[in-house]
Image 1 (cartoon, rainbow, N blue to C red):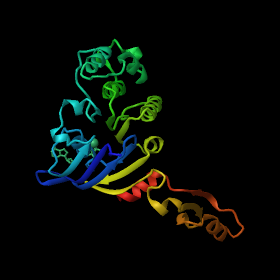
Image 2: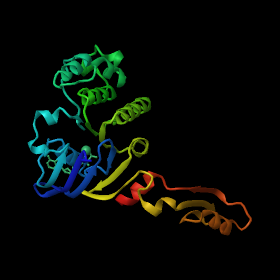
Image 3: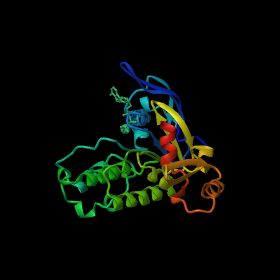
Image 4: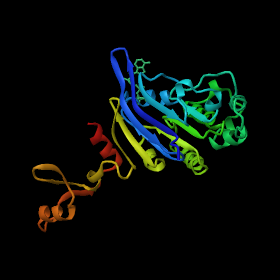
Length: 275
Ligand SMILES: Nc1ncnc2c1ncn2[C@@H]1O[C@H](COP(=O)(O)OP(=O)(O)OP(=O)(O)O)[C@@H](O)[C@H]1O
Ligand SMILES: [Mg+2]
């Protein structure tokens, strides 16, 4: 099977600054792959090179079998893009802009259905400039999927979404994934990664620090429990793979104040990785 995305030794240098410093990445057809990383890590740079919107300094990039830097309209019709910075066609209405974008593709989805899927039916006749930030973002998502893409790039798609909109969006992504769409998503929300992604890579300073399933990220560290308690000397915290044993030793029959035993969350693992 040909991977949907294959990247080898990707580098992107800006004057005096290395934004991406040698990245290897493979995304299989049908996967939902998440790219995590702090502000300035190089996520947007990497994704926009895959989309053909920026030129790499070095390295090899194949997206749906082609080099995005030289790919034509046929290739472009097979991918969908939601950029980090919102679109600007403020005078059009929601319905007009979705219908307009549909014209660019050979086999588009039904505009009304897509508007419904992103929860904008009530706003279909509103001008884009009259939308709230989250509603605009929903429109970006609508425009990203209208062309029935095989591969969908989503750069922080849910930034500004209210909790309900985020859940709606997750359902939409699962639905797209079930019908075979390959998805590359960047996000700062770790619950989103856990909810959606089959695989995740952590990028920091232009380098991939770790890669795996959301549950497997961090390896053995994921199995270490964090035991917290309080005594006359203050608050304490200890990491251990054997929390029951530790608590037994500590308490020695008496009550421990404010005792909690927790497993590290994906967020804990992530913060540890990028530290
Ligand atoms: N056009 C540009 N010219 C010069 N430097 C740039 C340019 N675009 C990005 N950079 C730099 O490259 C680095 C990576 O930026 P990038 O936008 O890829 O980060 P990111 O991971 O998407 O961050 P965020 O989470 O904030 O969106 C940053 O240090 C940024 O300042
Ligand atoms: Mg970005």
